[in-house]
Image 1: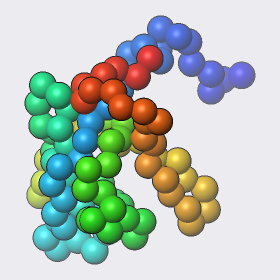
Image 2 (image 1 turned 90 degrees about the vertical axis):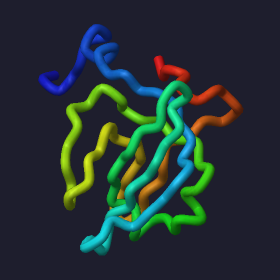
Image 3 (image 1 turned 180 degrees about the horizontal axis):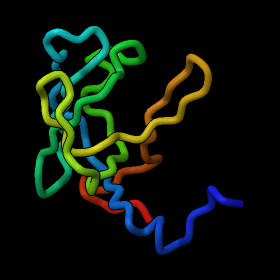
Image 4 (image 1 turned 60 degrees about the vertical axis):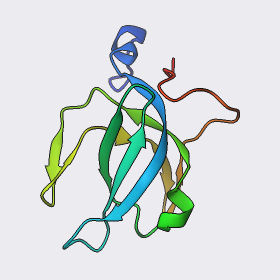
Length: 109
């Protein structure tokens, strides 16, 4: 199977838990939010296309999984320093969260 990954390859991903603290719409975009996510030892800005799926009120305080070792990318003039994880099927989307309290910055293994 050509699309399989090894454990070594998976471990290259640095996926951490963070809490969404601030949500703003990205100027000039109909679909993008700019999030400030508390990662424990730092706050990360993440630009994401969640406007069609979540209100700002629904996102505030949400504990999410973030890939933190992705190359930063500029989207609509805003820098994004990570990628949040979500499940998607057809027109449904759901953010990956945790089922009990764990401190921000905890690594997903």
